[in-house]
Image (cartoon, rainbow, N blue to C red):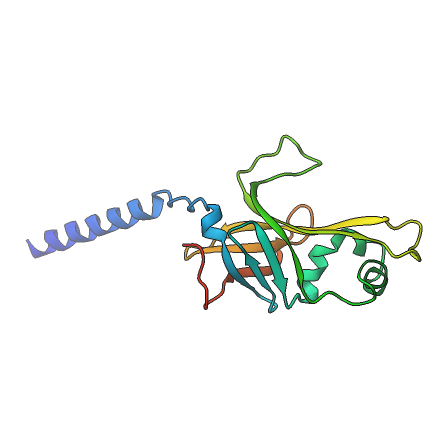
Length: 182
């Protein structure tokens, strides 16, 4: 009898493990604006404060994240040209603007809807210096879209590289001194 009991116990254990392994995983929680309000710390030392009133502040902007904020301009012009033309010759270390929480939007693919949630940062419009290259825009709107993701422990914000996604270059998680999200 002990042999049959051991075999039955082993069989039941294997069936349980197989059932658990085959069960669909729980979907990631859907974020709300309240989950995203607060201070976020970036993988390169950046800090984004998403405030309840819809305002946002970036501090200690790293080169890695600043690339996202001026991505379109950097395709053609150097950093030095961008700073001289749109920022009075100084690389910005901080910025203020607004944020919104939205679903995926792609100006080139209106039919695409993958259910992804995004934090849209609008950091304002800058007028070019009078000495600008005539090919560069007279006015440029700065900002970025950050994918809202859930890593199983809590929400995170990802600045994605490329189109389509080639991975992230900056990852923002809730700062320890002011937790946000779940």
